[in-house]
Each structure stands twice: as C-alpha cells, then as structure tokens.
Length: 583
Image (cartoon, rainbow, N blue to C red; front, side, top):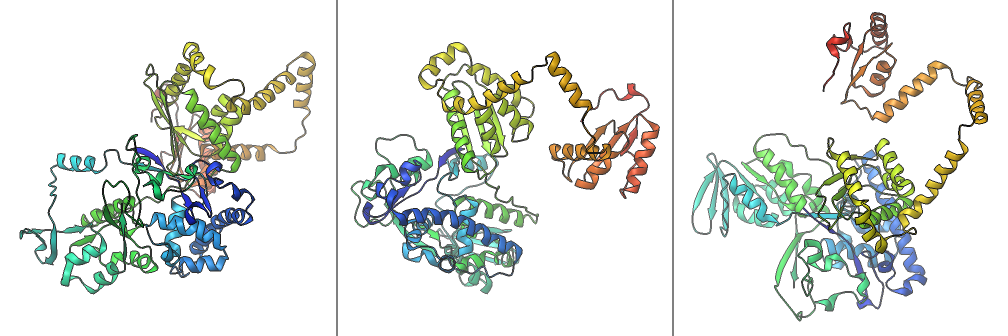
C-alpha cells in the first residue's frame, strides 16, 4: 500500500478574497496575511470547532432516537445552527464541492446525514490532522493478475447490452451479439447504467430504488487555476501527491470544468459522481428489497459515499449474498483525536524519529488508520518493527519522558507490537543500531544537539527523576524515618477493602472482557474468581494445591450464583504432573 496525505485549500475571487489551506499548517491557514486581523476569518475558525461539536451532538441524538427524520438537507442543518456566510462560502461548500465534484450552488441541497456521516467517518471535522489515504500499489493490475492466477476469466472491451432473467438463470447479451446464461449476476456498474442494462425488465422496486441515485457529470482537463499563494497548494491539485506518481518535471494537475482551454493538456475526459441527495440516502437503506430477488445482486460505490472503498464494501456484501452467507462488515475504526498538547507531542515524537532512524524501519500504526513510517537510508540493519498505537497518551509519555516514557506507555497499554514474538527484541535492536557512536555522530552533528525539541521536552522529566533520586537516598536517618512511617501508618482502610481495590486494579490493568478465558495459578480462597466473573462475565479457571481452599472457593462461587464446571477450579496434588503450563 502507498500512503498519501489529504489536504484542502480554498481561494475566493482568484485569491483576492479569502484564501487559506491546511497542507503546511498555520503558514497555509494564514497565507493571506490580512486574515490575521480579519474578525470574520477568526469567527469562521471558531465555527469550525463549533461545527464539530454540533455534528457529534447530531449523531448522539440520532442514536438515542432512531425515529428522528434523516431526510434533513445540509441547508436546513446550517440554518438551524446559524452558521455565518463566510463559514459556508469559504469552508463547508467548497470542501463538499471538491469531494463530490459538484457545482457550488447545489451543495446545500445534499443530505445532511450523508455529508455529516462522511465528515465524521473520514475525520474531516478539524482543520489539521486530516486522514491519510491508503492507495493500492500498482492499482487494479494486482487484482486482475491475482484473479487470473485463480482461474477467473476476465474479458475487456466486452460491452453488455442487456441482462435478463428467467427460471434457467441470467442471460447476458453483449454488443457482439453473443448471449450467455449464468446462475446469477452481480451488476457492479453505476446505477443509471444498471437500469439501462435491465431495460424494460426492471421491476418497479428496482426502477424506484436505483433511479434515486442521480449523478453529476463534469469535464476534467494548469496552474492558471491554482490558488494565488503557493503555500496553500494541496495534494488534491496534483495527482502525483495523491497517487505517488514520482517526481516529474511538471506536476499533473486536474481541473474540473475549466472556464477556458488549458495551455497544456495530456487528456480530457468526462467523469461522473453520485449525488449525495436525501433521496439517495433513503434508497441506500432500501437496497435489501431488491438484492438477489431475480438472481441479480447490485453493487457499486453509489451504495455508500461514492468512493472506491464503498465499491469494495458493496462488492463484498453482494458476493456473500450470492453465496447465501452472512456478511458482517466492520465498522469504520474510531479515529484517534488528540488534544492540543498531544498533537504537539505527536509532532515532536514523529519529528525526532524521522531524524533519529538512520538504519532499519519503525512503523507507527494508529487506531483509525494513520500510519507513520520512519526508515533509514543506511542498509546495515534490515529489521522492521511495527507498533500499534492505541491511545494518544503514547506520544505525550514519550515526548515528556523519552525512554522511560516509552516503557511506561508499553506498561499502560498505550501501544503494542504487531509481532508479539519478535517485536520487542527487534525494536531494541533497531535502537542499538541507531545509537552506534560512529553512525550517530556522523548524522547528529548536523541534525540535532542539546536544543533538539525531543531532548528539551524530556529535560524537565529527567530533572524530576534526579531530584527524587537524590531526596530518597537511603541514609541511616532516612531509613529510620521510612521504617517509622511504614509501621506508624493508621488503618484508614480495612484489609478486605484494600484487597478488593487491588483486585479491581488488576482487572482494569489486564483489560479483561467477556470473551476472555482467565487462568489463575494459585487461586487461593476464590476472591479474584468471584470478582472477575462478576465484573466482566468472562470464563475462569483456577488452580490450587489446597483441598480447603478448593472447597471454600467452590462455596463462594456457588453463593455468588455462578455456574461451576468440573474443570473450572482444579486441585493439583502432585506438582510434578504440572511443572509447565502451555497455551
């Protein structure tokens, strides 16, 4: 997979009006210096933050009340929340028009539920930290070759004129006059093309549902149309940025409906995209009424937001439907939304690793899809390790505590290794390879020093640990004080409450859930067994050598109302029989 970055910019009145972007941070946001003193521009930025909260509240209301009307338009949503005119013209409308290649004038007639769902799922409710895009390397050629290896027949240049059905199956008629009969058919074309191929045989439900998906057609053809200020340029203007086409002498630019003929043209074509209307959103919920009814299943990106990943999802659903198998599509992963301090910490940590890794490769994979790859140019170490980042606290701990913070983040479950067996040792090996004095001196003298942000942010933490270490030196006087403090502590908490609190902490640390099967070696009197099953509903197995403990633990479990299976609490009389327990 290739990783590319999404960014946006807006230029009104050929750069003489409001102009801003997101690719280069604040330098792009305030590319038009007058915006620094423009109260209307600052109001728009505040409204973007408010917009995020309003969208979150909108979906919370829908979750709590499924009967709420979902046919509201974007215009109605904007009017009900009182957003300013600049927010609409310089933010919401141009961004929607660039995503769905739709004329500006019709954007506010889009389905509010459809648009806001897309913004939420693709993490577009903030100015910075926009999502990364994963593009299949070599594009569709990989899929074609893989299918052919598995014996699939792929025909190109074969236009289908019609699809009809009868008791024998589906008859496919092509433009060369040939007709073939198949057991079933998946129609993965645009909705208008699908209706055209079905022709007069299309049922009333098929015509009504597929006809609700309308398309907009746009001509696609030079830097003449780019924003006036170069710092606002974004990846979306240049296909080499989104598709990783290398570094040509001139950028590949894409312009929709140019007002006049471009100076340099490689190719001109017309594209179309489904319109996210309220009618289309409603029809998407009714597709099950026509799927497989006449041995025909319908697939296509129009069944989602209109993009490739939606076409893939629809294709999987249609294939499982044809096979008469249940299909459970994974929900969109919850995006990691760091706080402002955590955002700064992430920038520091990623910048440090980018400079630090001279050999080997370390990959950060955030929950939600964002990927950071740090790969050195020195090939002396070929190891690669992938870290799965679970919480944004990972960046904060590492930025403020360096190596100790990394260990602390691992202990607290802020990250884990994809390779459970070799991940940790590979991470240490890569670290040692990059701290080799000869290799490090050669690069560090140019790229870092004592003022490096990563080291500066950890200096306070190092000073804190040093002060604590000095103040806790175990002299005779300090030892006498520590012993006195330990034995003179009053009993603010009885032993039972303290034990329960310890058990609760262990359950939380282990992140035990209902799906887990817990083995406790040396289960004692059953306190942990009762609490862990009571709190999580997991399956529990305890092992003890004591007959009295076994009887008492079984009694406690029965009193708690739990079911005991014969093997759940076992007594091991002979240690030699169970010297080693293997999973």
